[in-house]
Length: 203
Image (cartoon, rainbow, N blue to C red):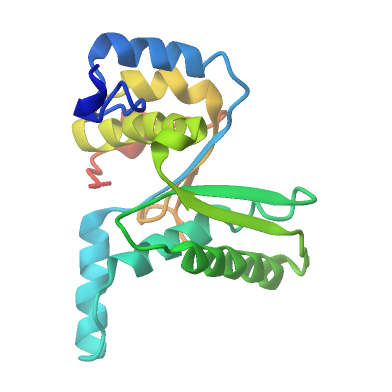
């Protein structure tokens, strides 16, 4: 709780906050009009994909940013035609400014949507990357993502169940049981330990 520790006193962060604080943050989040959308990748499936691409082309090199940008494009693909303008804030990762790369990923998402549905939409995109402490919504997203990660990696479902009323959509991209674009979970079709069966993706 001391500012010099750079943790709870600076910003809420589910991994760092003590259980009592975490409980109160979850309670607060449930009182707000929030919708949570996420895309999940399995690190083992991602590794298999990288190895396959290396077999096809010796020039291919894995870059973490490419994966992240691809997830951004997938997450926003069906979301950028629903408003007159968009203000999108990303949590800054590392010291480099990747705002333009993230903007490019969003524009790719828009093109993919237009290609798929034939619907063009050119609403303005305001994109920024900043530190989580500066934006409460990023802290909320961190809490939701923490609950999702605990579910997949530790099979701990109580936190995900608690936030489920706020879930808009979760896409498990590497669930091969569903053809095409992965498995979709919504408020009416919740993700549970039973629905994922024996799958143990590493988020």
